[in-house]
Picture 1 (tube, rainbow, N blue to C red):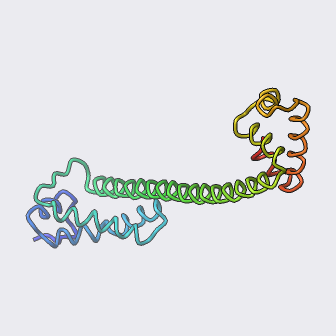
Picture 2 (spheres, one colour):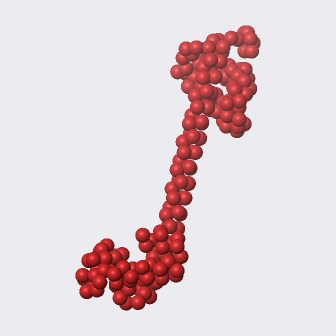
Picture 3 (cartoon, rainbow, N blue to C red):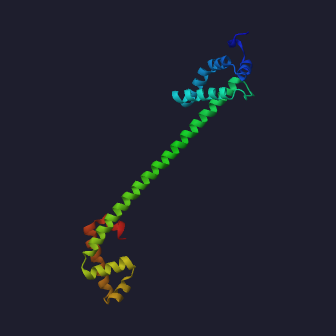
Length: 190
């Protein structure tokens, strides 16, 4: 019988379909290193390249009975490796997108929680300073701030002049500006 190493790819595949382990060993010997180099060049990862080549050969062995070679053996093996490489790349991109979106969600939640805490603290501080205003000034300020009434409406409701309403508002804003700082004032009062 002819040496297995002298057989062509078609003859090796015929023997492989007949469960010849030597034929499989010869195919492995011929293509393992070449397929590994091909996979490594594409992935730049030794372990992934080894795994892919191993998967291709395991698939070839497991499906040997039903295997129909429609192209050359090297063509089939390289195409199988390329398909697995593309699957790995797609999986990595999917994982990267998932991790990125997860990180974005975590960051957004953290910012949102931080913002809500700060907003609550500032609101409490503002309410405390408003409560410390003189009673009539506080009443005028709250009617403007909470009920969005005009100077005329506030004057009518409280039985005071529009000029008095305007004076109370100016003084209230001046006090709050001084106590709370201009930044908080612009962010939450207006």
